[in-house]
Length: 119
Picture 1 (cartoon, helix red, strand yellow):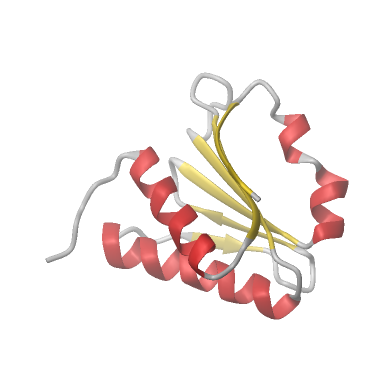
Picture 2 (cartoon, one colour):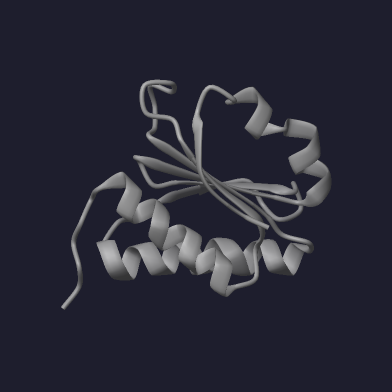
């Protein structure tokens, strides 16, 4: 039986677990409740190759669909170096190392609380 739980933190944890299993690097979970009007959490992760970025987004989307029956909208491609997956209460940002440094979302959204940082 599928677990249906639309709590944002639970979805974010599912995403983090999927990324960690696929060897995503520098995984960060940020609580943006009260900071960003469009989402509650950011999950930010680095993938070291185009193939890895694809594997990471696929793993996250598949795991959330399986456990929470949530569909998502994915924007960007591995060639862009930034893939965004919008799960509603959680937004996943997958970056190449260069794009992550360039966009520096951690600094841009520094008012948010870092809940988890796996390096």
